[in-house]
Amino acid sequence: MANGFVFSIGDILNRWSDIGVFAYVLPFLIIFALVYGVLDKTKLLGENKGVNSVIGLSFGLLALQFDIVSGFYASIFPYAGMALAVFLVALILMGLVMGEKDNLKWIWFIIGLVAFLFVLFGALGDTYWLGGVGYSLADMGPSLFALLIIVGLMYFVIASGGKKQ
Image 1: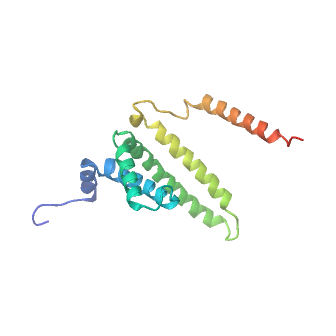
Image 2: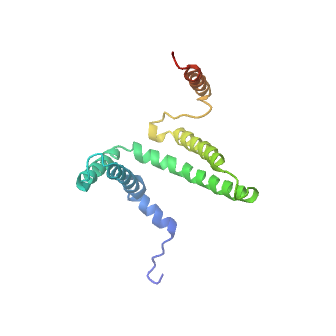
Image 3: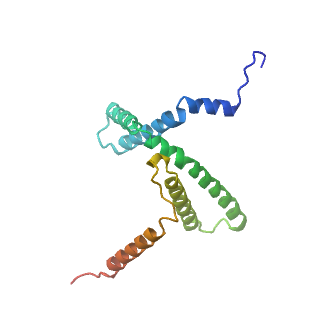
């Protein structure tokens, strides 16, 4: 403070944003880590870590060649943060009313599925990363209804087919 430099967390985060940490560095690290981790775990290309690293590096850099991935990440992660907040509130409220021996697996699955759908449709509604072509639940009502009918018919056909003699 004696030399006149005062930085707040907001100043630091804005500076990181200005130099591209959030738009390029963090998305690259996520993509590289996921590709490298999948290749290393599955041993798809053998156990050569150098090959896996080069493929992960190439995949990460090529994904950031255009601003589509950066824009999508900037859109989806704030919604994912809100979904995590919903999970936390659900966890607290369910902890108040549920016992230890209650089976909560399906309840958490349903909460997670609903949160995932809201995150996905919220991110798809932000259109700047799609070039202005976004989607909203209001626009997709008839399409979702048609998709539901098609999936229902597919289930009916598959489930009604018995074993052939």
